[in-house]
Image 1 (cartoon, rainbow, N blue to C red):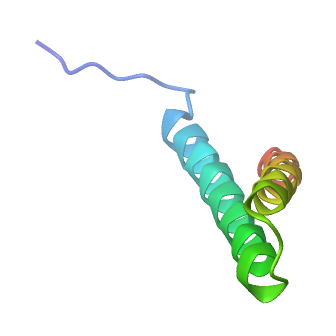
Image 2 (image 1 turned 180 degrees about the vertical axis):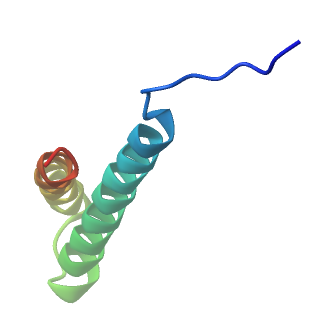
Amino acid sequence: MQGFQVSGTRTGAAMKNWRNVALHTALAAGFMFLLQRYGLSATLESSLLWAIVFGGCAAGLAYSQANR
C-alpha cells in the first residue's frame, strides 16, 4: 500500500500565511489598545474601538502582503 500524497497543494503555506495575518492583527490591536489606554489615558470604550479599527486595518494590510 502506497502512502497518500497530494501534489500541487500548498496547505502548509496557506496555514502559515493565515497564522501570520492573525498574529499581525492581534499584535497591532494589542499595541493600539495599550497605547490608547495607558499612553494617552483614553476611556476603555475608546481604546477598544481604536484597537478594533487598527487591528482590522492591520489584517487587511497583512492579507494583501501575504497574497503577493
